[in-house]
Image (cartoon, rainbow, N blue to C red):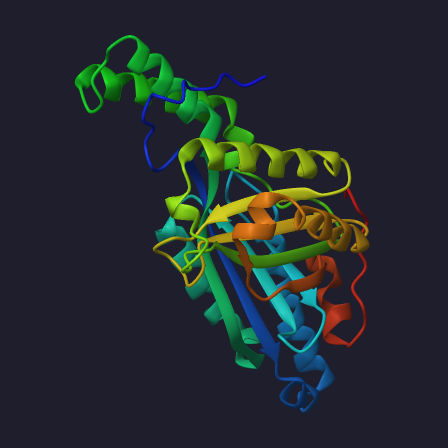
Amino acid sequence: MAERAHPSIPLPLAPLTLEGAAVLHQMFRFRWSAWRKLAPQDQERVAAEAAAALAAWEQPAVPGVQSALFSMLGHKGDLLFLHFRRDFAELNAAQLTLTRWELADFLEPATSYVSVVELGLYESTVKLHSALTARGVEPGSAEWEQETENLLAQQRRAMHPRLWPEVPPRRYLCFYPMDKKRGETKNWYEAPMRDRQRMMHEHGLIGRKYAGEVKQIISGSIGFDDWEWGVDLFADDPVVFKRLIYEMRFDEASAVYALFGPFYVGLRCPAGELSRLLRGETPQFTPGA
C-alpha cells in the first residue's frame, strides 16, 4: 500500500512528471481520384519508394525513434502516421522528410497532434514531500532539490522502457486527446493533491485489469497542442477499446473531471502492405510480428 502524507502537511500543487519520447500524430486524407489517374507503373514506383522509406522508419535503431502507419476508419482521415522521436527537432525532421516522398503529393493534412510521453508521479511526489517535510527540509532548498532530482533519476532508470517505447505490435490503434475539467463547479486543478492522487490510483487499477489485452501510452501536450494529454491504445481486438474506456468512465477521475476529444481508430499497415493499401485493399498484419 502506498505511503500517505499526514493530512496536516501541505503538498505541492503539481505532481512530479517524467518526460520521454517526443510524439507526433499526423492524420491525412488520401487523394484517391488523383492517384487513380496515375499509370500503373507510376503507382508501383511511388508505392515502392514510400514503402522503402517506411520500412526504415519501422525499425527502431535506438529507443524512442520509430514510426508506424495506420489505415484509418471513418471520415476523419485515411492514413495516420505515428512518430516517436528523441526530441522535437527530430519530429520536425520526420515531418519534413515525409513531404519529400512522392506519395506526399497525394496526402492532404486532416489534423495532427504534438506531445511527449509522460509519466505522472503522484504517489512518489506525495511520499517524497512527506518524508522531506518530516525531516524538516525546507522546500526549495538545495537539499530538497537534490533529493527531488535523485528520485527523478531513479524513476527514469526504472521507467526507461515506458518513457522510450516502441510502437506496440498490435493490429489496432485508438488515439484520443483529453483534458481535465476547469469549469465553474468542477476543476481538477483546484482539487487537493491527496484527492487527485487517490483518484489517479483508482483510475490506474482499472487499466491494469486490461494489461494483457491493451498497451497504453500516455503523452502530455500541455503547452504543445489544444488538449492536455494524448492517449494511444493498442490491441488486437478493437472491442477492448470500448470496454476499457467505458469502464474507466465510471471512476471518479473520469466521471467527474475528464473531457474527451475526438477518437481516431486505425489498422496497422506495415511497409510491406502499403502497396495493398494503395490498391484499396485492407492491409494485413500479424500481431507480434
